[in-house]
Image (cartoon, rainbow, N blue to C red):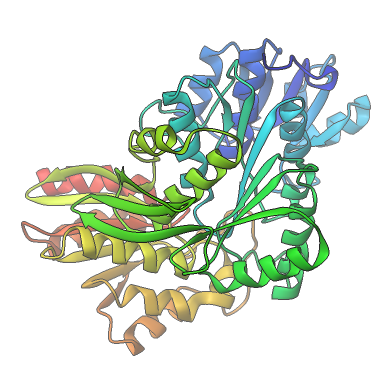
Length: 464
């Protein structure tokens, strides 16, 4: 039932094909029968998965990697203008397509659900993908993280629904025309691209304005930024708006969230009726993500009772409070949280799930610009842990900013009363953590960079 391959996408070349967003689009195209090629900086499991689907994946970036017959070159906002493959594309007059335009072309002709917000996009998109698959609706999906069950971030389905994570960081989510859009929250982030909350609101308004005629915006009723956006959108259009949350005025009202160890039981009031279901991951924020997914599926016509039951099959996304293992009586969990709100939510979730455990955090700040703007709040969030190790800033796509270091976070954390240790050599972390832990402790590796690599190393050190 899903459409075929857009003409421009028959022989695509992806620069940075191993990235979370890029690899998902490449996988779907390969599954639809396109001749996919691309390059990435290093070998990875993602590169191998793409090769298994028939894609050609080069390691390293070189002009010669781009085939003369490529139908287009797909890039993300992270690709620099001097990339040799991008320069070669200009020489060959090969069209350059942004990742978001490529994804938008794959959604054509399908009933799209686009999931947006400053936090929680990957989880909510994943919940929908798992639940709709469980209900045999065979959706296509593109997610910014690998599902714990299928172990992939994207799939081509034969059904009529396409679920996509919609990225606001570079305004690319404005390219989509969803039937249903979710906005989980609206906060100031991505400081290199947004100078103020007004710019953020304008961007989200443009996203909401792309919802198809007769479509639905599902939006949080409890979060201040989402409430402001709701008022702006309602003032400008006749869009169907469905609010969800714990507010008494919410259209899908959360009656109760009951923590049960590493799961939660959620009761909502929907169309005047109580509905109770299980969320198989810990934390109030994940429970609210599930309610957003429920509201979106119902807006698309999926029966609420069936969808609620299917949402319980979701068991997590890699890097979203993912248990990496246990050694010497110490559990190691990995978190992608890199914004203060996300950090606080995950730390509180861990506190609620294992209240007797001592919580130790290994935190790696992500981006100089984010640390410059939110370093104080990051440090305050770390005060929720019993002790923390803070690494140097992971630069990702950014150049250093003079005077901006992890010390901003460390100073704020100590001011808030936190026990914080600065470690500049990432390789020293496993030994440092092993010296801090005792049986029964929980270690949380946290951040959007390569801090995730430390989990297995910490476990190995604890086992030795």
